[in-house]
Length: 402
Image (cartoon, rainbow, N blue to C red; front, top):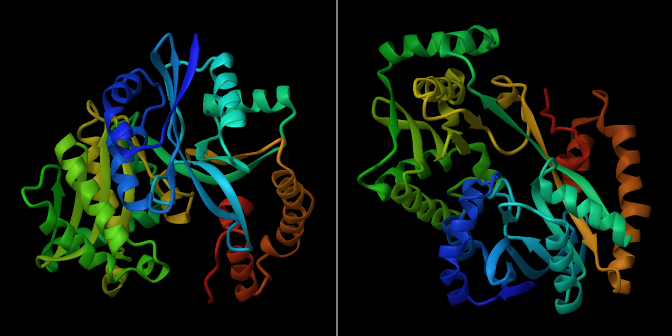
């Protein structure tokens, strides 16, 4: 006996914690981004204007699958077309890094039951899961559903996240690092003596707000602040990352690395420790000391500390996309996708599908082939293409003027 329960009230969502935690403990792909605690903090700061649509699949009354979803009116194709669309999305955004459903095992009948509920009991145009690992069992089972039911769907590349498996000792790992990294570190070692640089590792800070104040001071000066993605960019992000640090401190998840120059904070890494993995949420540094490569220096010192505790940790997950500064440390990556299913009975949803597949994607592909992958492309044109078509989907990177 399978039944689907929809959680759309805050009190019901809070009351779900016990069942959620029990199911997540048996979930093989669990991450901090799938915990009930994370979702509560996330919803508090990013759930405004959205409706909870958490679906709980029960077998003989026992929760066997939880789909953390939300319903909202959004944009069909961000940065290009502001066409309104009623979407059921995973409870995630740029600051979540990874999304999925929670289950111990995923059977065909589970996905069928969930699909029947979404199809027959919810109003929507698009069902979207992102950023979700391309190798997730959820993706594989949904693709089988798409094929069986002849559902119109798209699967777009979202991001490729680097990660480092700590399978060797620190000295062996360092021997294979690029020469420029070791050069930066040697310079830093001299600075540690000459400029009184110091490194602090915080796992259980006594004063979380005071530590966050130091991180905000650095973030406000960084390049991410001008793009609106820094942890200090607005009150919403300040609140989210502060509440998250309080939560992480309570749950023993926290690992903050702070680099100081004569007691002045100049760089930080905001990490979460979850089971045997370190998740790197944010890194920032003061551009005034960019010539010292503080980001690379701090990462070197953080990784050396993590490697010293290999019995506790097996992986460092860089999260986000495979940017050049991350690929200096590892070549291992995990692709993520954005899987979109279009409502098979709604004419507007079908129109959006054909607009996407017959016009937008071919135009994007043509522009990338013609302009996006050549060094002769003017900087302004290359960056314009990236604003129209996010690089997570087209595979080219922003360029800087010489």
